[in-house]
Image (cartoon, rainbow, N blue to C red; front, top):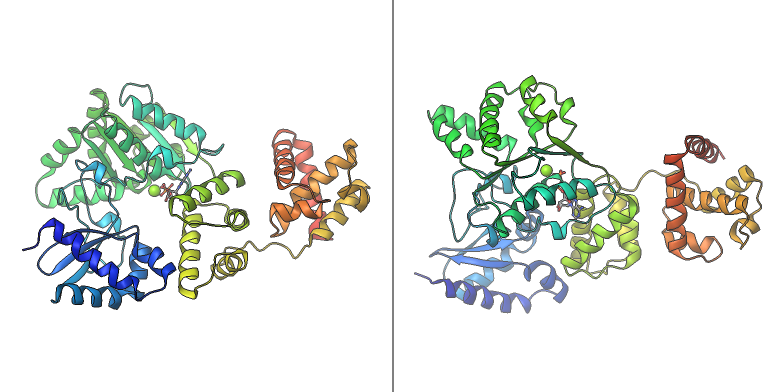
Length: 462
Ligand code: ADP
Ligand code: MG
């Protein structure tokens, strides 16, 4: 029998061996983040940050890890993996499916070293906290409402709170942040996070086992119900029926309910009228796609928290090209990391371009050069190139310059810094300011928006 101290000792020895066998960068990237959690007679349980990480380890360093274990323990001890779970939330239920959608179920075991499996709900990810959620125009209101609810579960008029937005924009993150916050602050005890899919499967299993009463009793006993992706309830009549009763019960007892969906509640087809009318009386907040500055801020934060030293221009380049979805932004960072570790090259703009191109993420921008853009804007405004890049501040020239900068950002892959250089060596913040200014005017002044659209058409045919 091994004790918990043995686990750290064994893994520490393995790391010592591995360190001598792989390049330093590989070690830092792929081995340092691994945590040893527990050990049994024939397995050591290792915790890794995400599924991608596990896949990478499994396909590249399986033998390295296995070999070191053999040397250290002298027996056939094998490594088994778990995906990062938060220690802070032990009393939140745990369910394995949700951490490894689809693949490699038999190889990877998800379990909490401290609590073992609980039967219902899903363990909350301790990284999904408000502090890690970068705020921008696109998500400000949703975040503020979530904080309000987390601070006073069931006590605000935001019950239920419904968060909606496209995929990968942070709904699950906010939902779990509410749970984490309320739990850590002690504002609620029994907090259940569950995706609507899991809820449905759980319900079906309960029917099969004749345990629907237990099912209902469990969900009615919670202080806070965080239900993710309720669009999956569409056309599942019986589940909706159950949920309706649970909902009413929780609501009457002033228990907080937070729901997410990928579209506005009113557009959820196949949901019972009475459920919809419940949602109607609730607070609905939306999350939009993040703007460039927010995307940059998110990548920066992610890089810092992962201990990555990324050049600013790489961050900006990724943020400019991956626009709609934060999950994709993060995926790209991991890919870059994997590439640089595998090819033993630094992460720079050249690598970023290559990876983006390979993943098909680079927007098919027209083959316009910045010179084309400057020339055509010059024609539209009757301003010559010298004035456009020069110091003139007359209204006409200043507007033409801002429009040209904005279009350069839209239609080239150049960084803001480089665009600035093309405009008489201006600073990148001037370019940011110009782009914002034009975007704002397009939003506020319809004729100006139409004018910019017509310039875009002209440029494309230039
Ligand atoms: P959704 O549930 O809307 O599909 P997620 O909540 O799963 O999206 O978010 C996808 C990824 O993007 C997660 O890793 C999440 O942490 C991250 N993310 C989303 N929004 C933000 C944000 N504003 N700041 C930092 N990370 C974010
Ligand atoms: Mg989600």
